[in-house]
Image (cartoon, rainbow, N blue to C red; front, top):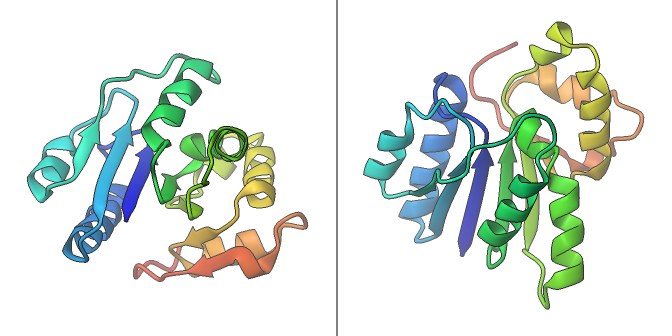
Length: 173
């Protein structure tokens, strides 16, 4: 199975640890695992390379919504079985990718999946609540990594609770 993960940054530590562990388990299972990272902070790329994950870092995102990035992501996910976005920015490309795949491909990826790793952006920039509502509406599956995230998505009126799944990573926040 070919799995393509998409994240904006690889440099803080929390998301990267969870994602690296997930990729390692997928590789052990025999899956082909790729990772697309498209912004400047790429401190963890070497760790993914050493684990055997094929990392694509040849695209630098432009400010705002980058339609060039959408085209790039389309090419990178063309033959994927699973496309998995991580955190807010990559999730904003999820709906258009789903539409493009549905229109262009003879076979769609088995699953489009989104994982949210942090919600601090909701307090820092309240407009992101609108983005999260949109993501909750269009994402076919959402995985949360804490009970707080689970409660947040399940309380959104446009998000079906049946598509929200929780895998506890040990944090209560």
